Image (cartoon, rainbow, N blue to C red; front, side, top):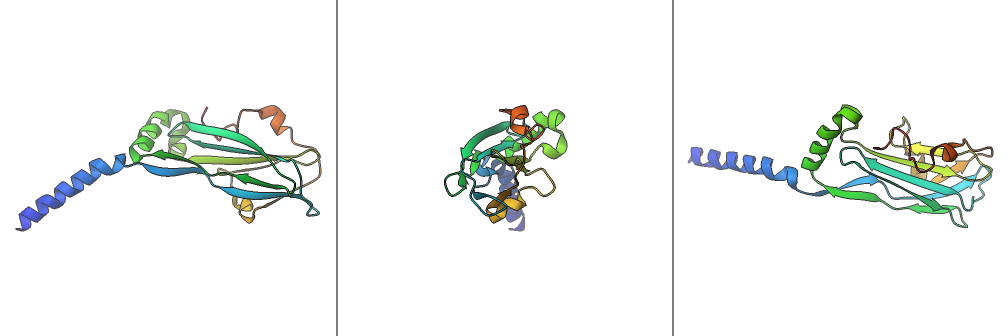
Length: 165
């Protein structure tokens, strides 16, 4: 009887190893966020442009969208996700290894850039040291000053080095 049970355990393990990599699951590329854009005095900044950028190296998926803050300075960034499987991620990572390296193979990247006239640009990325932690409060404070020319130099290009080409 022990050999019979052991045989079925091996069959079950083998079937799991073959089936599980192909089971689809939802992978989040960018989290849903509700932000309030204000100045140093706590006043809402109306019509600030918030650029949400997302991507996944192994799947070669990327995108970006611009959303403008409303009268209360609030902006809603929807969650970005994709259905995939472990097999697709591994195959994509192997294919893109030469371009992105081992570290970037399975990583999703997210970036948020905020532009407003008369204020310094702010940008946050999931690949920086502090990442997107500051956005967890839901409030972003912009300082008075000239923009960094980021938008002019990188319009439509996304964050260089952050997303697949």
